[in-house]
Length: 79
Image 1 (cartoon, rainbow, N blue to C red):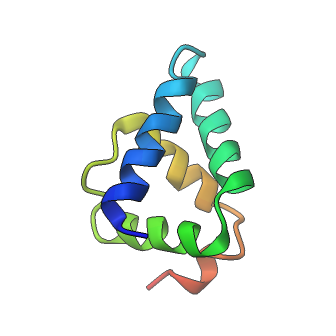
Image 2: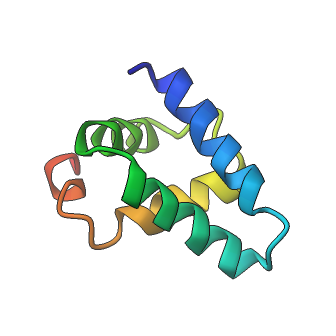
């Protein structure tokens, strides 16, 4: 899947959770992506994050960073 599509999806998920308090919104978006995105998608968004995370809005960026914490898939993408 293209990075642009993953960024768009992450931003849409973040938008859904945006009405919640910030900590809850970040955690909710991270949990949703970790639960419903397959390992390939997660590896790709982590690689995009490592490349600068262009296009991710603030909430989505924070959610991807949180999602990466403790995700065994992330260990395979860190440089």
